[in-house]
Image: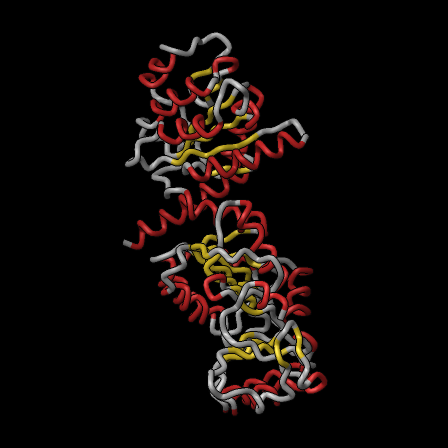
Amino acid sequence: MEALKEYDYPGPIYPVNPKYEGEEIQGVKVYGSISSLPDDIPIDLGIIAVPAKFTPQIVEELGDKGALFAHIFSSGYSELGEEGKKLEQELLEKAKKNNIRILGPNCMGIYNPKSRIGFSHRLPMVNGPVAFVSQSGGNAHRVAFAGIMKGYYFSKIVSLGNQIDLDLVDFLNYFRADPDTKVISMYIENIKRSGNEFVQQLKETTKEKPVIIWKGGKLEAGNSAVKSHTGGLAGNIKLWESMARQTGVILVNNFLELIEMIQTSLYCKIPNNLGTALITGGGGPAVELTDECEAFGLKVPKITEKAQNMIKEFIPEVNSNLSNPLEFGANGGPENMTKVMRILDKETHISSIMITYNPEWYSSEDLNLEETIKNFANSISPDSNKNIISLHNSSRARKESIDIINEFYSKTLENGIVVYDSAQAAAKCIHRLWSYGKYLKNRT
């Protein structure tokens, strides 16, 4: 109730509880029964939060009132064993009899900023291009807020719990056709429908939009956790990896990889190759960046002799390495870096340019952060397929640094430069995006 009021939900809201009939909650009249609700406006959605044993009766009452959907927040079903499974079956029979589709049970429900519906407080009511379907209400909540830090918002988030009726396949099909959604992401513990049907739907969807899946319960202990959480078996991770190769799905391992991969799919172009140019200030960081990139599938090839000679015209070879990684030492100011990126833009065996620097260096009195970042972004021609990737390295843990880093993140994204917290994260994401592009090419 508080969330719907907080988001100024435009439709009528009917609290139903016989204990408080005739009273008001949040300024809204409470009804004693579903049958006593007004008939002038049809009920779109019933949100059910009563003990599990009463839910079949509530669904039947909603059906009598002509409701189309029920979100069952209540838990106490198949995740608790055989008795819970019987209750789920009864619930499903009542729903089918009354032509009601069920979301859940045991789930948080729907977050839809365009419709001003949310399942928690302070969710951003900003419509974005990302859909997220989750078997965990907690992960649905985390992702909604984490996206803001990476520069994106959501079209819809659905927490679907035990999925006794509406399931992963239904929402995959919906988001494939949803004009508000450009990237589909999922947290999956188990599937309830035929695996073949799910695979076929994924094949159809990835042709049109990237699908990112975080698979929960990969190992033995995690499998047991899944069974107690949503009442299903997790499935062998090797099967999921095989499924990803067959369908073009981008499989990630954890929450952080999920939010980073969503950012990558939104803002990065699919690279033509794995060639990566590394621009850094010193030899130690250059070795680390090279190791991380190659460990996670990217290549760090030498740039052409022609490109090296062009760079030598304005950067001295003393205290520098100009082959790749490119170590500039004290010669790595913004002007020189911009010139180098223009040269690298012509190197066809390079698809990604990875820059590492400290945001504070570009926020001094002599430099304007926004102008510097714009110059970096404009160094790549508009029709280029290259991505500029930024790795920030800030060693000053003070308030001024935090403010600068936040500004740095927003300015880089505004100008089409994606920021990662590590070379490992960048390499994983770019390699996965390249693999997706390779899959799409092989499909045509």
